[in-house]
Image (cartoon, rainbow, N blue to C red):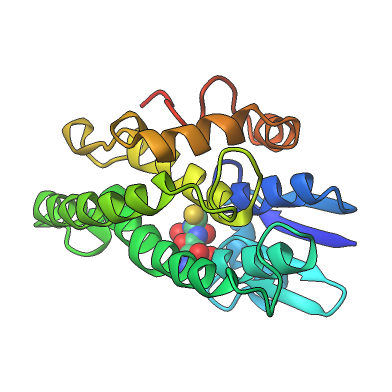
Length: 218
Ligand SMILES: N[C@@H](CCC(=O)N[C@@H](CS)C(=O)NCC(=O)O)C(=O)O
């Protein structure tokens, strides 16, 4: 039994989708950030920085979106299995997304955390990094590898779909938003992902509807 801790529409959403897609027993606990739940001793014991997601597993408690997605992916058939030849490319692109895309999206969304006085410059620089990296990701998605395909659910497609939502809906300034529609192969993955019943269940629990990944409202 897995127990996922999160806040509605935060990074736990990708883990929630993966849990639903895996079809494994799980419970989702939504924390109230305004009530201080993330800084409670109980939550700090789960996550050293008081962030989400965190997840209890039979082997212990985990944190970091990327780590949790990799764990679920390899245990529940949502990523190439250890030893599979295609795992080499999958791991490379997974870390590219975790380290290169996710962090840049955070700067696009919350540039004031880097510099309150220069938030616009930080957000513009993040956008420039994202545009470059999205082009590379689009190119690999266009080759339709089994681990990043609209035809087959996987943790990498789920992760990218959530980040597409963020870079379109939550950009710090509307003119800096990045639309999935500019990346047809990635948009196809997000469109397929958001249509899947598993994703719909997780989205509903997070208060989301419509084209929440491929064309979210800003
Ligand atoms: N690198 C971490 C980042 C976690 C993170 O920043 N989570 C955000 C939500 S997306 C959070 O918990 N924010 C609450 C806060 O800033 O207090 C991960 O991927 O898990």
